[in-house]
Image 1 (spheres, rainbow, N blue to C red):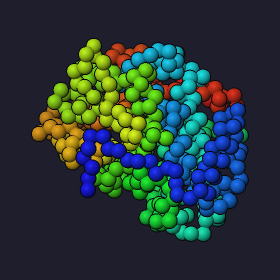
Image 2: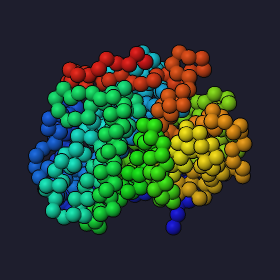
Image 3: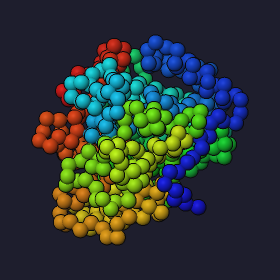
Image 4: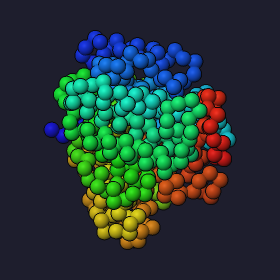
Length: 448
């Protein structure tokens, strides 16, 4: 049955059944965390973890934890950093130095900033550990269903790491080695897409044995297709983006799940403490012509109070409880990907059809309860420019606090740093000092 509750709660499937996997995961995390450098590119984990199905399964479990748990996690930092960069968030306490620097933007964001460093380091560790599974599973794991689960899971997280990094950094390394070379956006997106395609080929063969030993809140097959749709769109492969989006079950949910031991990092660090950041206000940080209609029911989903005293807006949605799950993707993103892909090919009829499905979506028909709930759809001018602008506006509302707006702002050619009506305070982030010190091939930082 579809869950139409405003705040979907999915209990984390950790710790896993089986003492061995738990011990292996603990040992793995200790090995990684004890190094002074953020990771040794030539040997990110110990060889014992790599040489058994149980060890590789423990490593696969660790991928979700690394990606989504704690203040260092990519989940926390891709919501926080780009949220400040695009004006979605407001700082509560400037004493949180890293958050404050990204809020100020421009030259205040340097290579020693904690947000951009954690995002980079933890994403590269995720990619490196996923690559170990992809390299070892075909030879080490004899059970076909477990092997398929390992390959599909590792493919998802490797691609997620690469596709995330290239949204915020100009170039990204693709190999795990000393002084790894950096590659362009096109190369990185292609690698992410090819990785997902390989994972999709295995996703239908995942066995119950594998599922019983790993967290089940992340729907691997649907998440692979959702990320394919996202990265195909970013790469300008519009027909492929539409085809991938069509394969995603819009009634399903895929989340990073949390509990009291592993709490939602945004809720735990910031929203519930009210000491780091909160959403800016009902404008979403947008110019007047793009701000949401007051009748938009998504406002009541993302904010606890639409008329707070002293403009003290606070987040709801996926961030108002320690056990609130954070989606891997939102069903509405798939509809908006289709709308944009059609619009960019000047197929305006199909673009508006997909766009209207978002504008008219009732919250009770969405697995997370995200819905604008309007009785009528798009009524603006039937031009590519106007329809694309409305798609961007809907993305800003539907995908609020997902970290996607920074990429969207550039792709839709919104005013950038120093331009009249600036809507983001940086275009890309500088490379972390931890990378520059350890990799002589690190490129020069983007100007802003």
